[in-house]
Image (cartoon, rainbow, N blue to C red; front, side, top):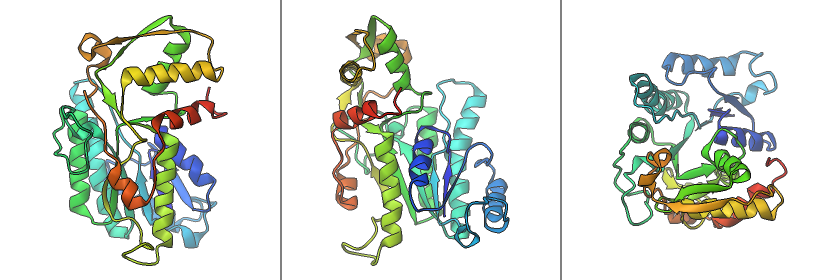
Amino acid sequence: MIWVTGCKGLLGKEICRNLSESDLYWQGTDTEVDITNYEEILKFVKEIETKASFPSKIPHEFRKINWIINCAGFYSTSDSEDNKEKIFAVNSKGITNLARVSREIGSKVINISYSDVFDGNSKEAYTEDSIKNPISIYGQALADGETSLKKEMNQYYIIRNSFVYGLDQNNYFYKLINQLKNESSLSIPDDIYISPVNACDLSSLIIDLIKKSISAKAFFGKNSAPSYGIYNFADENSVSLYEFAKEVNRLLIKHGKTKNVCNINPYSKNDLEEYKSFLNNSSLNNSKICKEFKIKTPLWTKSLEKLIKDKRFI
């Protein structure tokens, strides 16, 4: 079966929704299992295999955890010591704990990471082999978590992302939408570059990866599962945050989601306090994952429109 941590977050929710429509057995957890506590994780995985009441809908013979999808994470721009401690506990120590438990029970790990492991100063999109040089506490914790996972085990996938957006309303994307719907003008940086990815696309990729691995008939060649390691994933083409906001605005009007006409003005990141924590460039090169997974990622404009047209979109 599959265990999804951070199941109440943006990506975790989408993965659980897709899993519920599949033939795969799974269990999602959020704060009820503290991944910063090794003993608590170990207790959970043992209980899930032995207790008939937990979870009741999964037949006993399918309760062995074969995959852990780690969507748990903690992000904060606050410099308080409490926040620093929690950032490292969840994004670094938590990964170490999951890796050690996975090694003990013989499961595989899919860990979600982000382009914050880089410094954002590259003129090109980052590849999987680009040198990590985080400039924030959050980025350092992510980088440490990646390093720990690689050290602790071999059967892992690290999926790096740049700018994930989706249907969860507690994120920058929905804040932007509310502003576009209600304000007459908006200032957006035109010197911040991102690689957008629809959470629906990322969720589908992860589940397809698991299915391919389960059905793989060889260790090498066309019938094998994708090789373990680090992969960048993003929809096709990078874009400035300013251009992204303009396209969101255009699609909201096109599909009748708003009648408000918001004038979007380009500004420098340095002139807008709320954007100073953003990397200058978080663009990711996704050619490796396209080749290894044998996929073609959609244009970011197409994925964005697919989401805005979704009947679940408010």
